[in-house]
Image 1 (tube, rainbow, N blue to C red):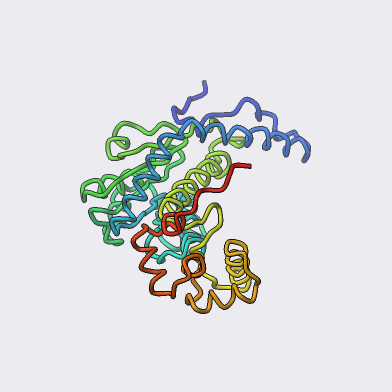
Image 2 (cartoon, helix red, strand yellow):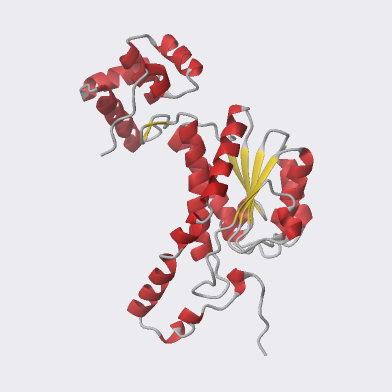
Length: 305
């Protein structure tokens, strides 16, 4: 008699029950068919994700930080999203941080058992000096990871904002510690319990939306152009020049001059050109406008094509 696990991510997928006999092309088709359902699952959580974006924006505007806490794939996805925020949006490295059960070694090699103790999550919260005004998002594909529950409970007790991202409904004792619950139920995996697949894809989509949405709200984009990126390599330096040239309607050489006068800051260079002011005045105008270029320059949004 089969024992049915109540966690959706641990149940067997009847559509892939014969995948061990499938050809390579059939495997691709089976996986692709399952992956196509992920975006629809994420869409069911649109209001909850929007609330998380609001909470992240409020946190950042108040000087707080966003933390992710997870184990295995979930933890790695949190670290990944956090590590990509500084080069993409020009923020400090401590503004978005990822905590993973087992610490840094777990990023590269599974640390079995690290996720099984809630006190490990609580300890990591303490080690990162989480405080009131911060925002911690626990990530648990199954919804039941003890490490995540421990981190959420400690963060909630400190007075921080809290949220959870899970792909199977979390138990009440976990939900009790979350101010917002984002639960895109992606269903049984292609390979039973392999949550690095559909659940991992859904999780990455959600985390991308939370940080990208909050950064947009903070004025890190002009339209859909990233204007607070850090030009830390040749590719990003080229992108910076192209953005300034396009937005300001100037030649590449003039874009370089503006960037040089703006200490390499794309957003500052754009405001300097549009308002015809030096760097310090541009910075002051941006501060008054909440960092949003269109508020500073009083430009209407472009027509929808």
